[in-house]
Image (cartoon, rainbow, N blue to C red; front, side, top):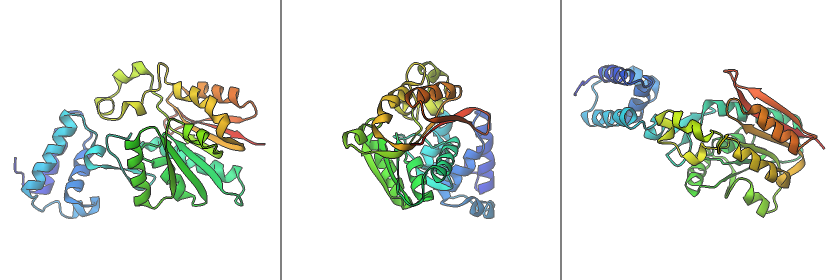
Length: 289
């Protein structure tokens, strides 16, 4: 299996992925990872010979991806989010591009809702890799960002990401908003991408997702809305008078989550935002005193 030249190995790998119904660009991501190169560096030396040891390791990873459905992000140990590289491992969900829209929407609304004079306290609930909390803290340095997660393993990953990327985030271990409630902490902004997949839909998820990513970060009970319901009893205990709530939701859940928020906060402006594919994706609630 010694193809020698890098471009030959890449060509073989792309065909191997294609015939197994996997994305061909995985070959490029993996080979850059094994060669410690950027994409540009890779293209500059496609005609170089590939070291046999690196080739073996590369092929082993390809097989794990194809046969064991291990996501490429777990194999290379990272994923890009909002232009930064985040460490990921099987203790955390892999950050998705649509969640970047949640971050962007929150940053815009914070600028509109709050005056520049006072510090704004933000909490990211169920932080996982820390992608949302860390990005908010880096994009707007005046925010005071904290993050919660029920899993100590996830928090380890989030802390490492905050440290590597130079973000100041305070981490709390606990269920949803409980750590803040117990500490009697009030916040201006609650943002969360909670588990929202209905139980029966788990079976139809791709094996890459359901066999490798942490199910506790995916499943939201029978109809997928369990966590949003629990938020309704906890949110009033932590929010200040002027506040913003931003939830990522699964397709088709926007209306129901908006109804829950409207019921809990009758004075709030609630709106549902759609993603680039026209699916309901984020629900915002703005409270003004």
